[in-house]
Length: 145
Image (cartoon, rainbow, N blue to C red):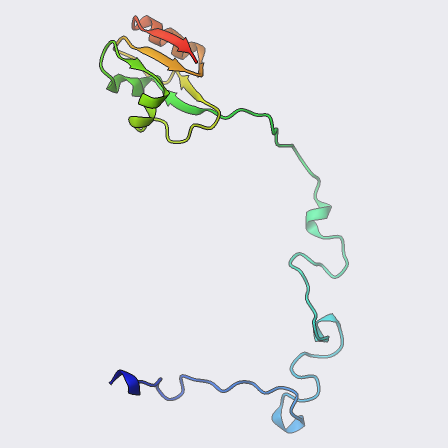
């Protein structure tokens, strides 16, 4: 019967009652040890606190910076363009539908990894020089958006 379920004996431990006299074994300092910050009520020591010593994250030097003006591009390899039919106009929407571009970021960049065997008109935001040469060598066209 589900209404009569109970845990097996010994599975539930009693609560530790601290500060209830010397006979309990947990009296006087209530298992907090002797004096100090951790023995006081309301004490909280944040992670990384080293007892007043200069913490590690402040001892180590700061290096580098993050350029907030940097442009990120979704990369598409030239070899992945072979899946389209010859003479097709390949733009950002078609690349998205084909699953070659998942996140747009600041645009699409075609990079020259691999070979292109068909003539395509490729429209993208950026092209590497090698990608441009390979598309034009396959008698295709390159158009910047």
